[in-house]
Amino acid sequence: MTDRDDGLRGEPGWPGPPPPPARNEPPRPVPPPHHGAPWPAPPSHTQPAHPEPQSLADRIRAEELVPARKPVPGRGWRRAVYKGSFGLVNLGPSPEERRLADLEATVRGPLRGHFKIGVMGKGGAGKTTAAACIGSMLAELRQEDRVVAVDADTAFGKLGSRIDPKAPDSFWELVSDEHLGTFADVRGRFGNNAAGLFVLAGEGTPARRRVLDPAIYREAISRLDRHFTISIIDCSSTVDTPVTQEALRDLDALVVVSTPWVDGAAAAGQTLDWLADRGLTRLLQSTIVVLNDSDGHTDKRTRAILVQQFSRNGQLVIEVPFDGRLRPGGVIDGSGSMSPSTRRRFLEICAALAAHFPTADPLSRERR
Image (tube, rainbow, N blue to C red):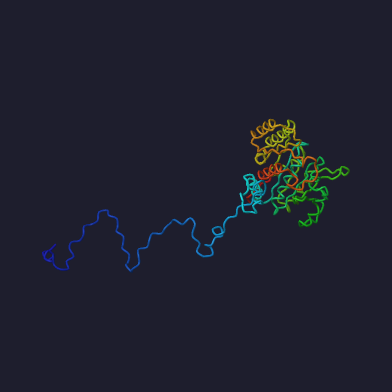
């Protein structure tokens, strides 16, 4: 520094000595240009959970303005109070009614593709009756779908007599007809009951004995799959028949009907063991054991032991009580043919089956 520099110190305009160098200080932010606008806030990454609708029409919601209506009781003393008060006193459905409504909602749940249910059981256990009741219940509650019951019992099955004794044709007529393009063409080959359940009957008369074989069964089922969403297959009493083994390859669920006695329960146990020995684990997981009191003479202790034994094996067990309306035989027109307690049990069975309805792309499902 020169003497001239020293002389300029203190003079006006002298900027003074330069500031000392910064020591690891972070850079100071550059102030924004001041044009009367505030400094922009940093962007927020948090979005509101429920963004407010932008339009007035979207902000007017019916659920906020229209009061919810309490359901009307359908039966019992609550229904009597409602009717007696001319609708002024509405106690709502009972817990039992709400439970039944939940079961029905489960049965009406979504289903993609096709769903096949096999029904097996020792002779006299009520296998065919159970197949007709399950099919009728599903047809009643799933009006948007077509439901068919198929008599695949090679020992002169009687499924047609429980659904529609006037069912016109069987497997052979269905397979031999080459002009079945639409459902209107197929419709004349089936019987049906008041519930809307269709039936493909078995051989109608012993005088014309035609033995159902796997090839005929397979071709008939492939045609049914074009027009029906749910199929209930009434199988033979034993699993060693060729047609039953063919049916087992394509089932999505199985119902094994057992009597509450030793012989019927042993036969049901043999069926479950047969499935396990052949590695049909997925089918076992969707198998329901129906303990059917077909004569009304069983005791609670016997039923409790059997329920425990089957449940220990991992199966869902549902008890169906004796029903005098179903015992004599005849046509099952739907749930109106059952007593309330029997209807409740078959509703539980259908809800348990509906828990296995496929919801994925049907093309991704493998044939067993």
